Image 1 (cartoon, chains in turn orange, brown):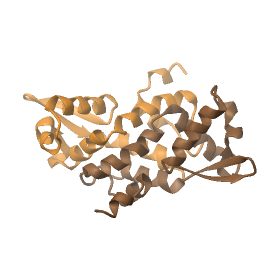
Image 2 (tube, helix red, strand yellow; image 1 turned 45 degrees about the horizontal axis):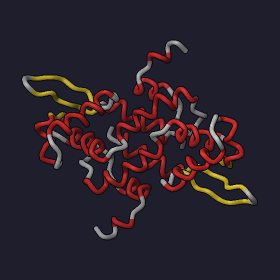
Image 3 (cartoon, chains in turn brown, purple; image 1 turned 30 degrees about the horizontal axis):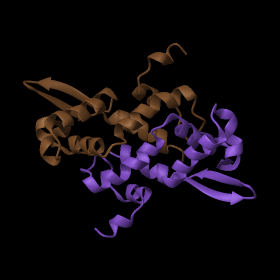
Amino acid sequence: MSKSLTLTPTETVACCSPLVASPLTEETAERIAPLLKAIADPVRLRLLSLVAAHDGGEACVCDLNDAFELSQPTISHHLKVLHEAGLLDRSKRGVWVYYRVHQEALSDLAALIGGGR
Amino acid sequence: MSKSLTLTPTETVACCSPLVASPLTEETAERIAPLLKAIADPVRLRLLSLVAAHDGGEACVCDLNDAFELSQPTISHHLKVLHEAGLLDRSKRGVWVYYRVHQEALSDLAALIGGGR
């Protein structure tokens, strides 16, 4: 149990059975909810989708600005939320931070939600 | 386009490509976000899971009370949110409303999130 306290939300998702296969514990549910909250936002859903579709599967905020009527700091904030949730990886090159979808985390989350059939 | 205005969130999810396969439109993202918001809550995640695990895959609020330190009206409210999002089906028998997981909606949502590999 003390070990599970160190798990990130994405690690928790990777560990647990599908939602409908066996009852989630309170602790697991508390850990997974923030991951879902991170994507339960139209701007962040589109950001994930746009990053994945961009050349080479990665993009910086400079590539994403034009798709939104939002300021660059606002978009950077949403990217940061997705990164902190473990759904976007990032690397710095020159003055820009490049983001890439953490496909494994998305796949694990999908298996958790829909793995019951 | 006018047709898509009549789609429910679950119908929208069933229609669209995986998140990472092609960029989501603003309209689609706006429709999907409420579905994710509905499950981005620890109590509602556990309710989905408990309903699915219950005898015959269905449960009424009377079966779910004991798992939570919440009042029955609060649990009923969360069940209603999940029903309105299209994630729980319901039927009335006698004085109780019985809920059942709408597995197709969860599977479609999972395909949307993790269908990129």
